[in-house]
Length: 104
Image (cartoon, rainbow, N blue to C red; front, side):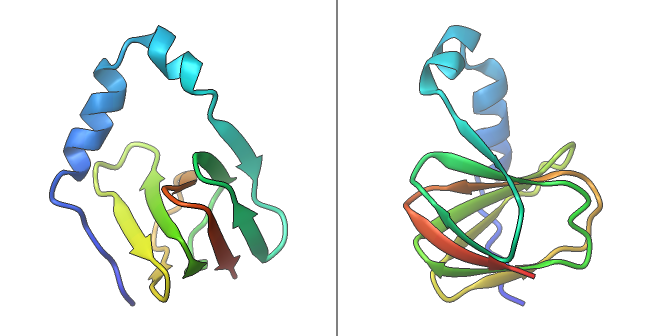
């Protein structure tokens, strides 16, 4: 299992909590429900996975930022890396670059 824990992951969460809500709304994040195994995610879009425990995310191309509700440990994946989920809380998979993922 390849997990990239970014040293500034907690800072990212703090940044979005402190960022003015008007600026957050202006970003117009696209939230996509996870249906099926293969996903193409455009840069800036976010895939939502409810109860993801025991799932495996493989980043086939692009770059991903993965976070779980209520958890300050974020995961960054580049092409060729994967993450085996061990948590039940809702998971958000955000495309830092346009990405293709396999979610099994």
